[in-house]
Image (tube, rainbow, N blue to C red):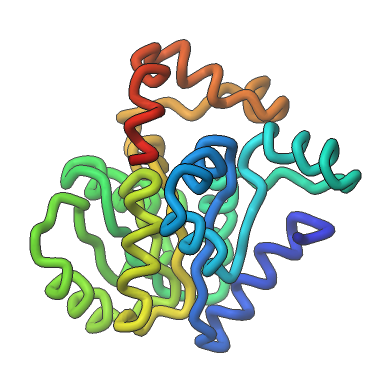
Amino acid sequence: CFALYREAVAYIVDRAKARDKLYCVAINPLKVACAREDPSFAGVLRGAGVHICDGVGVALAVRLLYGRSIQRITGVQLFFDLVAAAESEGLGIFLLGATSQSNDLACRNLLERHPRLRIVGRQDGYFKDAEAVVDAINAAQPDILFVAMGSPKQEHWMAEHRGRLAVPFMMGVGGTFDVISGRAKWAPSFFRKTGTEFLYRICLQPRRLKIVPALCR
């Protein structure tokens, strides 16, 4: 893990510049539960080059089980910081996933906030020909690929296609495009600081409690 949050951002930018291929996964209690149920998913998580602690439950478990304190790095915040770094460093990004409307609005809003950002390509998540999408991504030559397909689908997709993808860094970002597009709300500051964003999401969508077991299948 990284001693300081800024080390994670700097490390990822350096790897992208060096064209070192790796992908990042954000570890939270749901992913841990899914990995326990699905050995293939556990392998996908282990295969990632960067793991970030995205859930307060994971941080507490590490402290209780191993006596270590690790810093939480939320996936949404890391996304925003990597986008800012990509703008300043001239790195190209590709946005893959979400609906066509959310994807388009996310791109527009990102460019309003970061006028010099290089968005070299985008593709919604409702495609049938994965090989054609891989070819399109490679043709765009991004330095960073953000995959917003929801977990565990996005992690499986990155692991399955990383051999053919000529992208140095990939990261699964879940519903982040919906947040950027304005179609979903980012948890208020209190929930983000306390690591209880999941409670906020459950309050907004109680049905999440019913679908959690199905996500792991």
